[in-house]
Amino acid sequence: MAQKTSVPAWRQQPLREVLACDGVIAYPTEGVWGLGCSPDCLEAVERILQLKRRPPHKGLILVAAEPEQLSPWIDWGALPLDRLTEILGTWPGPITWVLPTFPHVSPLLRGKFDTLAVRVSAHPVVRELCLRHGPLVSTSANHAGRRAAKTELQVRQWFNGEIDAVIPGKLGGRKGPSEIRDGLTGESFRI
Image (cartoon, rainbow, N blue to C red; front, side, top):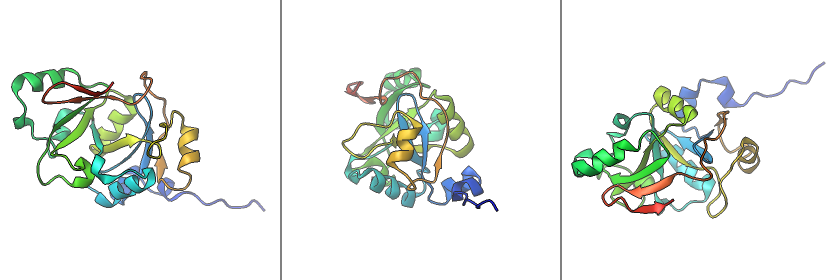
């Protein structure tokens, strides 16, 4: 008689339910594998911070498929028109912008700042996830201070049993994490 194997909980329910139930997923991005969750589910955001061993004061990134998806978190009106035009001209793409946010946005997302890092991704897996499920928290799949996962196998080894779903796919063409720029000055924080 064949031994019955247990099916992971995330395989037993649609991804929408995983994300709605404090679920944390891993998925390929432009240059590294990411960990993500719904930004509306602060319990899942806390799980990601714990999994990564990342201090909450640093803040996280949100990814979206369209700029409009970021409107609940980003104060577009606080940006000068020329800066907004430059930012929108880089999306979709691998550039993350640090933009003014609203006071109601959780410190778990924005850290100790009055800004929030956001990106409208061109990566097909990220775009599909965001079109279907809304914006996602996106942070590199690694423990704080260590290199980011570049393969699905690394994600599975480093976070074995600690995440709820691994979304298959290939990385985009970047050599590493997305570039990060200041939305008010254009200055690069990470290239």
